[in-house]
Length: 278
Image (tube, rainbow, N blue to C red; front, top):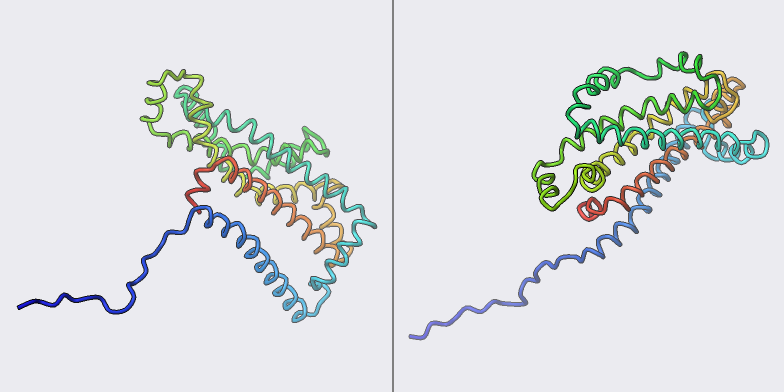
């Protein structure tokens, strides 16, 4: 007796097809700005609702704040204060990076340096550096040097510790393979340790932008007449809240700009992370 074979009824179930990597990257690039735009609109909407509900001068509406912002460029030289704050933060991040990365690489790789310098870093790292501001001003004066030094003082130890820890995570097999291929000890820093630490250092710098902006604000409110921090406190004392919020908005945009630039550097220089995250 012939046994009938069962045949599937209807159309076969389509199998899932993997989306090409290029399309994933394109979709991510297109949707990310849209997500940020929607978030920004929601923040301004919440700000407007809070301002209307409170109905007090201490919380102006976004429209009043933006109107005051446009006036600040003509009446108070906002661009001069913005440029001063930008220079202070930019130079601080740059100096912290230039000084902290080589020292962190050396401490993480050289046992002798680690033995002598790690205790010093361990003791100084947790101390709130802002308490040294009066002492720094006594020695460096009231100019830009004291403010830049204070921000560098905060960021420097974070760069050193992050770089050292990143070097410690490099597998011994990687170093052995490098030496087996003819690599020299001094070449290890540039070809092995620095690439291994780069992503962690950039991530740390991006996360430290908020700290740098906070220290900048405190430094610019102490015996100075130039900078966004000075303007914020000055407008608060004059009870010009719309201009105060406008300056706060500019300082926030400055912090976001630094954050995005460092994020872009990480995206460009650390391609293996880009491929892993898409």
